[in-house]
Image 1 (spheres, rainbow, N blue to C red):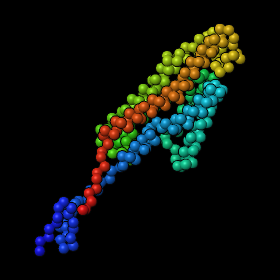
Image 2 (cartoon, helix red, strand yellow):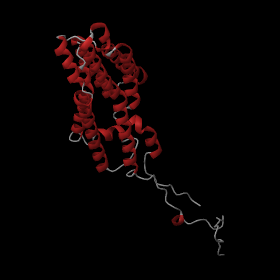
Image 3 (cartoon, rainbow, N blue to C red):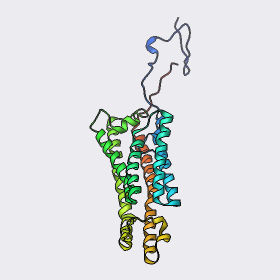
Image 4 (spheres, one colour):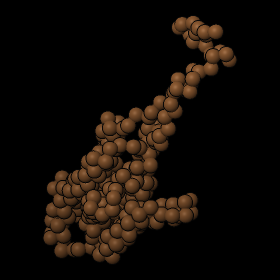
Length: 270
């Protein structure tokens, strides 16, 4: 007896089983979910915005209340708390927060010991350039670049795209470090204004948050001018650098979305 399957909705019959050759193949391949990557893209980036916000916000608030020297001490404590919290939560500490804390202790310590804010102002540049050097070294050491090691479990993209992405982060870190120095020396004019105040007053140890208590007349004007220019850098450190990071991460997400491999669809038997 021949079995006929009506169209267009074929139905199986116990008398006419589907031959083995007619059964569709099951496609099995491990592919990370793109949605998982999209949820984790910010957290997986080398420069984590939440951590930056946690460490920079106390510095910003303390600066507005008490000046840069108190703010530097507060920033060191906040970074230490971030590292301790990471250890207590995960029983491990990521390399970058640890390096950031170490550099902050060194450069912040020099600022506090010598009463010279220029050291803590250099810290963001040193941190970013150090990250750039590490990412560059990963291009030649090991089988995978650093950015692929950090994000490879969340997304599957071609090897050439990982290389370009690593180079993009290197360029971003170098650019951010240069922009920070530009703001310190040229954009805000802080360095020149502070040097003019030191030359006019003959003093090296100057707390710009207490200008009215120490100076009068022309020196007070010079001190207030230097303090206002210092304020520009502090605002840039929190809002400018965070904005640059967010813009870069968003641009990275759009770039990666063009190269992400589609998740294969599993065929089901009729």
